[in-house]
Length: 140
Image (cartoon, rainbow, N blue to C red; front, side):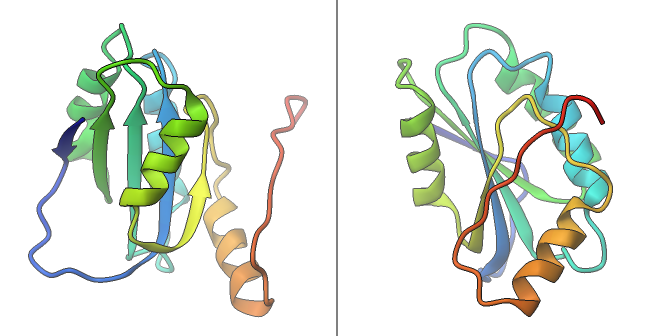
């Protein structure tokens, strides 16, 4: 497994959120997802990270992510499998390396709406929630 870190942080701190993104041949969709995370972040989200687990993509997914890292406001770590292991294993590996208090699992082909992160933060800060799930509405 290869680790490619986007930014170096000098002090280690617990992140509030870790976005875990398994991807396989996601070169055409991963940028839109990362840009949507970037646009959805706000003053609440100075302390979060994104963990991308590339499941042995045969396209240029990793290169595409490396090229956009400098344009984003958050840390990205990339872990790459040497063989295809599937999305469940990729999620588990991402969770293992994530440092956030809360894990948010996103597929590589989704996009967050502008207030998604704010809504998640508000929900978690007001309620005693252990887990939640969401759906994507194609018709919106």
